[in-house]
Image (cartoon, rainbow, N blue to C red):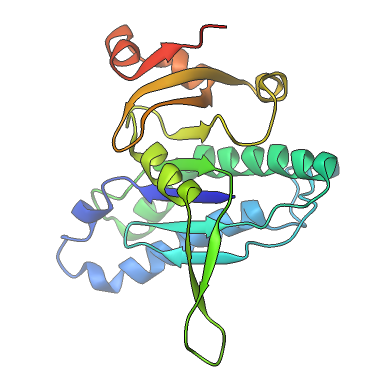
Amino acid sequence: MAVIFDLEEFTTFCTKPQIEYRLPLFLNETFGGICSCLDPNWAEGDDYAFLLDGEAPEHTKFLGDGSLVIWRLPEEVEVQENFIAKLLSRLFIARETFPALAEEFHQKYALADIPRKLRFGIAAGEIIRLRLSKPSGGGEYVGFPINLASRLQSYCRELGFIVSGRIGLSPTSMETLKFKQVVANDMRGIGSEIVYVDELDYETLSSAVRDKHFELVVI
């Protein structure tokens, strides 16, 4: 399973004078906040049923203005579905809580143009690990889910959380998680693709944006 997140307006932020003194602090706090949400032992409030049962990410890579994160999904179907559902909820919480984290950083260091929005693209499927010639066994990863996740995070910037329709959960399960199934009708290099978006996010889009980027799924 591949997740790509992007810090919107990060490039503009990096052009600020003497930003190199604050940039590592901002990135550490950003990734620290996201990692807290993804900690298998973390639970929101007292809801310990929300614990994430599964392994830590197999691979993470900084991409300049965001990151690629890859998980190896559990093999048992029921366990896998439970893991995906909880992971999507965790990632959505990370997206929702990021503006407060950014505002706290702004108040602490009085910096303008701090990135205040995270965009997520999420996809599942076969991902191949390429072993490098290093004795340590390091590697890179390739596969359609990585490309798709990248396209999803940058598609319709008015949204900030788009999940592939091939994520491995039924439409009923995604509806329970408050996601709406729609067709992304013009994704660069891919064309049309069934995706899931947060119901409330979708309803807040203007009709012009919805018509431009999405179509309803016809059954």
